[in-house]
Image: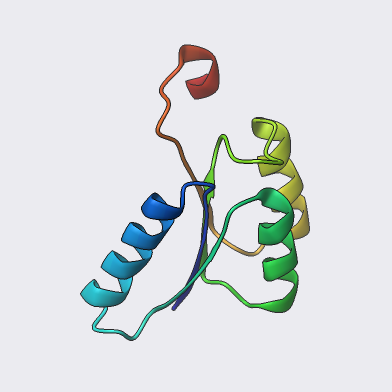
Length: 91
């Protein structure tokens, strides 16, 4: 399994990546990036099994970034992450 973690917080990205690698016994691969443009570029060249996108990283612009990623990568399961819980974002 190959997972893309797109989040602009390096500590979070590295911690989740290390956890995934450790819990999978080192069999799952993780690629990280810090902005939407890098996530789109990575998905053009690598076949990911799962993508985790930060709701508020550079380039996301809320739901517009998610729509843009989905349109370019319809076959890849994608989940949204956020450390911010605001009613308008959840809605």
